[in-house]
Length: 62
Length: 431
Image (cartoon, rainbow over all chains, first blue to last red):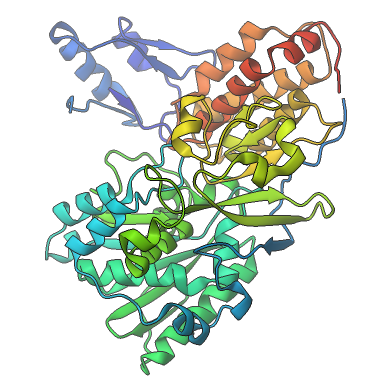
């Protein structure tokens, strides 16, 4: 998961939908931690779609 | 707390360069195309294989923190290029050194512009590219003027003038069309993606890169973007050949690198020198080798007093010691300057220089600067943990490396000057 930082407006929906991997810093911006296992991919996709600014992206592991 | 000379927030008014072994060898002859050709001969013609071989043999690298090999970028550009207009490679000469303490690209533009333009010209022909973009910093108008004069000379030498469809002025010399652009003032305007945004006609601010420029850069095309010095090194590598180029430097790091030093007697000036890799730092710095030295500029790392005495100008060796040379800015502190206070001032400048578009940078850098200000003042309420936490919160969390570089500077200060920091934490300052 990668954040498009200039676009992110700290709405925080991603953290609500994927608290296992996304917490918010003291200003409300996402901190992404840990690997994204199979079991969380669905939730991650939900977090990506829920972002009102389209600032979160899932990138295939290269 | 003492004042400091090392922290400049505007580009140098006067740039002095000393003649050097390769890139700065002919500066006494002046910057003209005629002088350049008289000394260096006609521009080498090379195909892609030859350019790759020369860049690899000469170990030509970029001047960012990572020192990325140019040959690898060039190979990626060639592999991803296609004939369709949307896949044609783009070439960018980046002269927009946003860092006020740096003047190496300015020195090249003013004193040896054709070394730089030759490099781009040779590679463009090898890639069968007709257009080259050159970006100058608006803050240093003499640089743009020097580039425009040099391009005009090349175009006139080809006896053909034309207008391009982009940039404020364009001419075509032989098959090459030069497009000149001016980057707005600011520390981050020279960042690679910011420069590509500018060329594409959008505000010249950093944006998120989802792929390397070499794969998807200007308008999504494979793009070879490098600073002026790297382009000049490519030209030198092809002109001198592997043996001639390796006459200076070491076997692991052939050739030379440009360094920018402060000019003590004139705070508005900067000195640019060309050092062969492997030169002792003592030779470059003199007695200043015993002072704390900030290497790699405002996004760089601190060398403790005397740490450079046993070391040479070598990116590999410096990396082993946790140091970085970056774009070659070398800032020794004067005897009355405090590294903690200097780091605070640089951080405050960097916080103000943030484009302010990425949340962690916009919020974190001013918070970091405020903490360091209290540390510099010897305010007992500051905690080491809070400073490292803030550095961690900005690192890697922006579209460009501005927050990463600031975190690197701050962390380096905390580890290199542990004792001074301890004294500051209890309310004092030794300087």
